[in-house]
Length: 536
Image (tube, rainbow, N blue to C red; front, side, top):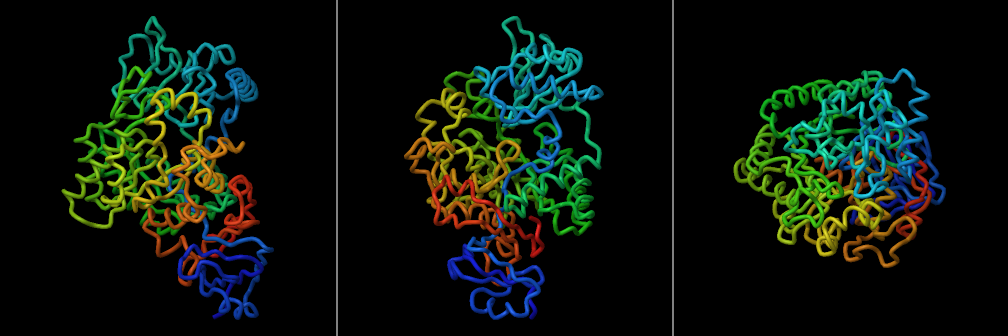
């Protein structure tokens, strides 16, 4: 056998317990074929010898919950991410509008919801910058919008507009809309009016997004919400060789119409399967059980401390969520449930339990994403029900979102049991990691560093935030590789480096096992290979 590549000159960490560390790895036909001495023996006949230059080779990363297409499209909008004040955002909107005089809608993606008290944003602030065209800005969590008066006018939102069941139109004391919209029932008034990107723009966005993912060591992602008109963009990007990572598509089930969506789900999944692109699959259905704590829309068992919704907003009744999860499971799809609040998590777990009772045992791997707040009675149910907990480790820190919006809403007791990564691992649950990009950074090493230290980038607090929930470097790396591979039903294909596995690889300049958390976050990614093909 003539190998295509032999990697030498550094440390190879397989993340497999049988041979955890070795010094060489050989690849042929896109698969790992040998390790250690056997790989070194192949060096003389290899097409390429890759010198790791003292770095480390690891299984590549996967992202268990992200939005590559949304992220790529967001890179083309008003650059509001990371701005630190309302004034800075308004100035950015003004400049972008002046530079794009022909744009009918002014759209910005991922602004910081903590820059205004209680996350409340006034339409009049944007009116000063762009009085005649609609402005729509989406928060980093994508569960709220800040819009100007023209956007409210075009959406038909007035003081007389009834409050949607699954959303909130934040109002002034006189009942008129303030300019802040929360959750899908309110967001959809505006979202349905936004211009739809064409196929070419979507393909360009996917190429840019997956190229960025590859630069961070990623070779697989769960796109956690793909609309029917976006499926062709993925297929065409794959056909043109412009997709730099494998992506599994999830279609969103909506509470009021999910039964009418089933035929579309099946036809879209069949379309993807018929194209036989090994880079694109469509095996998953997405559900939103609730919203987010910072907006007061995550569903909680006990009331919020300072929220007009009391217990938040559950997007589904338990009966309907259970029925929908059971039906998509019967059709062979994997359920992927957004669940933030402890009631939202319980609803997701109860829906899975009902599904198991009705459909019987099978290897279904339902996934609950985010699981920010878990009631103590529900934590062991993840392992008992075979539910994958897909967490976003970069969120497990006391940043401004946590200290300014989240903790004041839920208090110290519930605040002390957020993002229980260590407890879930100890319980025997399957844990995977993801980014929810564009909500937070797509770079796995930053999430890994946070899972290990539970500190902000400035190293605070020194002992870590909720330090009992910290995990080891090895556990964090596995959650971003083998853990995601398990979620994807592909643990026999990638996630560890042993002979027979796909050569999905990442080359780091330094070994995370030997570094502090702060150093891990900054390690350069020197190379990424997807099935033996270099993508970065």
